[in-house]
Length: 152
Image 1 (cartoon, rainbow, N blue to C red):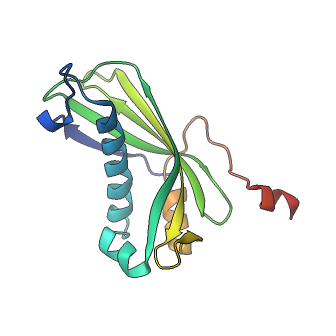
Image 2 (tube, helix red, strand yellow):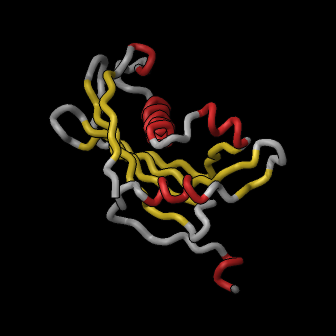
């Protein structure tokens, strides 16, 4: 299993009027980590465009613990919290740490893959599912079982 993380420096554009990182910047960094993970494993945005497939989110849950300010260095991780059998549905937990390793926030997303031509949910290539499964498992990991899979 692969532990995946990236280090970022908080920018002026990431701040809110209270001069700490705005709520939506946390989700922006989480999304960036997901896309960088895919790109570093061969699924760049250009490759996804050729496949006519893209990630979509059903749910995004952010929990805030510590303020993050301008020019602070943050570490953002991605861990797999769930995936269904064919890889079409997934859950990722992102932890955002301050430079002193205090947890600043968590961002949990539930997502799937969209066929960009048909505009319908789709099953990704098996190689993409394998890459998703290589993410380190989060402590809350549980297989995702859809209702139709339960009846089969």
